[in-house]
Each structure stands twice: as structure tokens, then as C-alpha cells.
Amino acid sequence: QVQLVESGGGLVQAGGSLRLSCAASGTVFFINAMGWYRQAPGKQRDLVATIARGGSTNYVDSVQGRFTISRDNAKNTVYLQMNSLKPEDTAVYHCWTKVLHIGGYEDEYWGQGTQVTVSS
Image 1 (cartoon, rainbow, N blue to C red):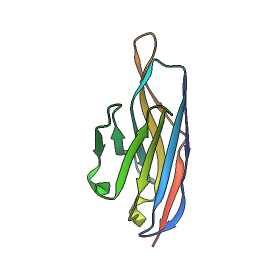
Image 2: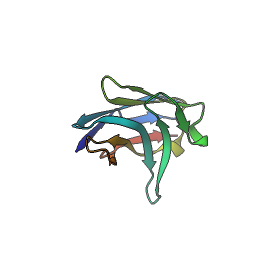
Image 3: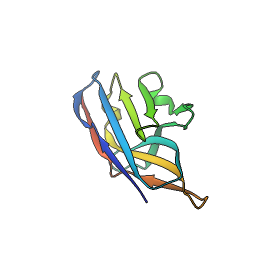
Image 4: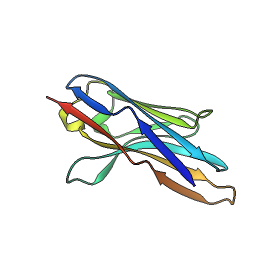
């Protein structure tokens, strides 16, 4: 099992910044991809950004140039630096990871989520 613990959400004015963190713990062979998804009220959960173990990144178009995803493999932690925040970024942000277990199978895990609210 893998546990993901997020932190860093909160309330910020439009144009402001927040930094989310997510630490993974548990017994696995290694942690592969990590990332962030978000879910606004009444909407489905959507991809924000992902980062592979080697560092390659992927962003949804709406956050490209404003958000930066990074990770520290030694700490099994992924970060999301969010700048120039807009009211439409308001959502619950969920950490995600894909891991390889010792038995050789892959699995995915989700964090409980952290609320990000951007006021206009």
C-alpha cells in the first residue's frame, strides 16, 4: 500500500501563488510517475500535470506557463508550484502516483485532496 499526503492548499487572490506538496510513503519497488489532478464542484476530475521518474513533464494547456511540477525522488515527494492563479483554478487538487510493486505489477494511488480557492 502507498499513502499520499498533500499539503499547501488554501485561499489566495487572483494573480497570487501557491505551492502544493505531496509525500508518498509505503513499501513499493519504486515510484514511477507522479502528478496532480483537480476536481471542481460538479465537474469530473481532470489532469493538471504529471512528471515521470526521469523528470519529463506533461501539462494541461490551461496551466502551461503558469504551473510547474517537480519531484524529489529521494523524498518520494512531488510539488506543484502554481503562479498567476485564476478563479477558474479553484478546485480540490489530488495527488496521484503510479508505482511498481515488488511482485512486478503496477498500481495507482490517490491522495485525499487539498482545497485551492482563488478569489477574484
